[in-house]
Structure formats: C-alpha cells, structure tokens
Image (tube, rainbow, N blue to C red; front, side, top):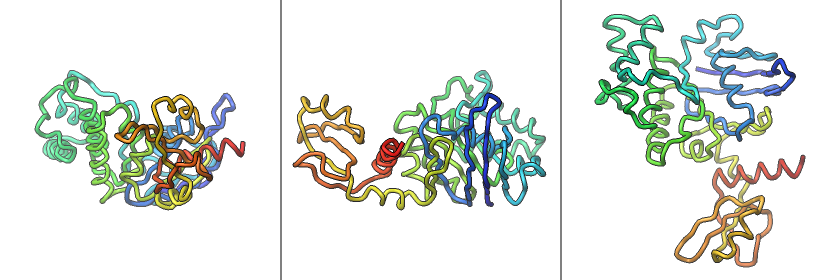
Length: 292
C-alpha cells in the first residue's frame, strides 16, 4: 500500500492558497502529519480522502490515480474526521450496522463485519449501549470502528485525540499503533506527543508547505545541544513565561523547572538536556519566525 502526492496545490475560490506543491510518499505503518492549526492539514486530509479535488497536482493511492479511479480508491480508504458525526440514540452495534448497509453490506457478512470492527476497538462488550452514554474516548474508538468497516488498506485520522483526557489519549494512541502494523495509517495532528509516541515517519506542514519529511528521530537531532533546563522560584515565572523559545514550566521538589530551546544557555545555571520532538518543533517554529 502506497500513497503518493505529487505537486498537490489547493487554491480556494476566494484566492486563498491552502497548499503549495505538496510532495509526499507514504507506505504501510504509522505516518504523522504535524503542523499548527491553519497549516493546511485538514485541506490535505480532505484531498487524500477524495472529499476535495486539488487545484493542481496528482494523487495516487494503491496504484490508482484519484482523477481516473476515485471509486477504487474509496474502497481502499477508511476515514475518521476531526468532527465525527453519529446518531446518539443508536447503540454502537446499530450504528455500525447502519453504516455497513450504506456501504453495501448485508446479511451474515454485515453481522460478522460489525462484530469484527467492534472487537478490534474493544467496544464489543458495550455494543448494545447507546452512543450518547459513551465517553469521548469511546466515541473516538467508535469512529475508528466505522472507518475500519470493509477492511480498508489505509486509514486516515484527523486530530483523533483532541479533547481526550490523558488516559483516553494513551489508549487511543496504542490502538492506532496496533492498526499501523498491518496498514498505512495517516495521523494528522497538532499534538506533538501523539506523533512522538507512535509514528516511525512524519512530515511537518507549515503554511501549506511540507518543511520536513523523515523520522521523528532525525527531526529531533536538529535540537541536540540546544535544549536547556534550569530551576528558579515562582517569582521567575512571569519573567520567563513570555520567552519565545519556552517549551515548558513545571513545578518540582527542587523548585520551578524551566525548559527552553536556545543555541546558547539562557542563564548561567542552565544544563543541557536531551531534546524531544516538542523541543525540536518549538525550535523549528521560532527559526521560521526569525527568517520571515
């Protein structure tokens, strides 16, 4: 399974250009698309799922050209949008049956498929409960279940963990990781941790352009030697809170710990620490602002 984007460009009728010549090559496994809100991620997701046509460029999925064979591509794809619509009065089982019928399934095959997808996302035990009783995490799992109907070869999920509590986010990331073992999974998010914890490959989308594509580890290496931590008092928070390269502030036994990305030590007692993906992301965004 391979997804190829060549020169994808999108210009809206009002003249706004959302995408500028996107080139991507995505194979099986978990692929993270990272970028701030407004970077063009949702536009790209809608093009990949054939909900929108690009103004220019070519999209090939599973060997099929999107302009020539859209129906064949749709049969290969499962999609969970950021805002997942559902019928709250239906049970999880009823909802999957309804969507299965809409996709041409019936009889014993439909029953078997509904059981399969609900088991995959660990919702089989609550299949007869109404969706309105589900937690946020359970609803996102139901969203993945509907995307898996028909055994698609590729799964595209847009901001899947937004609004979930920490435990639900971890559970959902683990589910996506498992699915990525046997199919191509594209995870579009502005939450850096989601990509760092799950993806073997990633791309950074900024202002409608791909600014990086490769492994998270290679992206992180760019921040090596430029990530610092130091301790201060609560009275220091106001001074450092507005620092452009501030990554985090956390309170510990030894005081308030400040984490900052900078080519030089931000203060005398700062110690150099190993960077993570969030550090590298903050570093990249600040360098982009400086270059603008």
